[in-house]
Image 1 (cartoon, helix red, strand yellow):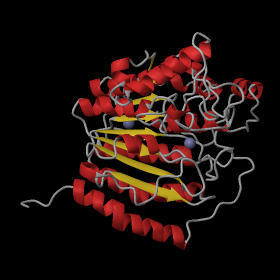
Image 2 (tube, rainbow, N blue to C red):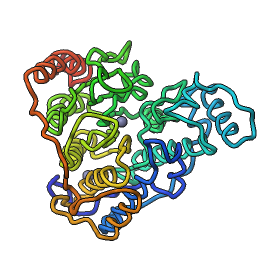
Image 3 (cartoon, protein in one colour):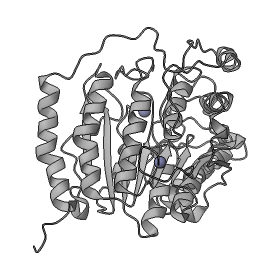
Length: 403
Ligand SMILES: [Zn+2]
Ligand SMILES: [Zn+2]
């Protein structure tokens, strides 16, 4: 028996991966760099972790128009197709900024529709593996486009692969708990399911007072039938690892336990790290294996292990992002991440892409001092417990027998 009390057979885990996924690229000057995926895969490979028994690697196909329409409007999808034609030079230029396209965050590129459809298809593939029972956990590191809305793209996101995957689970009659651990608020997924009681969305993020997209306040708790199926934990700047883990333990885990989902979906953006150039949360590398361990225990407790993991933000592409995601997924695979020495082959590959990697997987050079949670954050957690969490538990928690 292993630590979770299961028989000692390997867990079936699917990793969705293929070379075409790196085609999702806004160009060399853009913060979102697809090299982070190549370097994540090569680090997992160089450590030998892709040979873990039970793990299979599967290649995705693009999401179809019908599948995209489960989340997005036809005019938006047509605008993305138009954007692709404009970028290829087969259509005259036109202003698509109404759809969040051709903006500074989402500049056009020649494969924009095809690449975004493939990302959505990859998360759908991973979800399908869990729905079919082929996998207990499934991972699409290229997914996590949580800012995309029904009618427009935003914040480096075109199609909302997470929402497309969740919609497939809901269509199969499953209830889903979505946990967003990116430094930015998971506004797109929240908005798409805001009035839907079949999807619980929880986001832990740097407060919108300081960071894009500006939403994710504690008072956003769902609407209509979805009242109580939405929770937000905004964090102060320079919060660090301790605040994030405390938010997980006091708000995220109790909300998910009360909701009793059939499937858990986790967005694992690692732009919470102190070296990330876009954010101010200053977490340390130890956060990622700690979150993975907590989530892993939680999914085996609440959803018989059914768990879809997607990537997300992470803007130190040659060093921190691949290490954070390798530490996260390695923990899911049951690997010990402390004291793991980075293979020299990988350190060379990282340096070739502009990285300056340390000796060990979890080393944290130049880490600033972060503050332990102070009275104002603790009282904010008290308020969320008494407000959004209590509402969610009343609405979705186990009812009292005989009532
Ligand atoms: Zn497991
Ligand atoms: Zn982010």
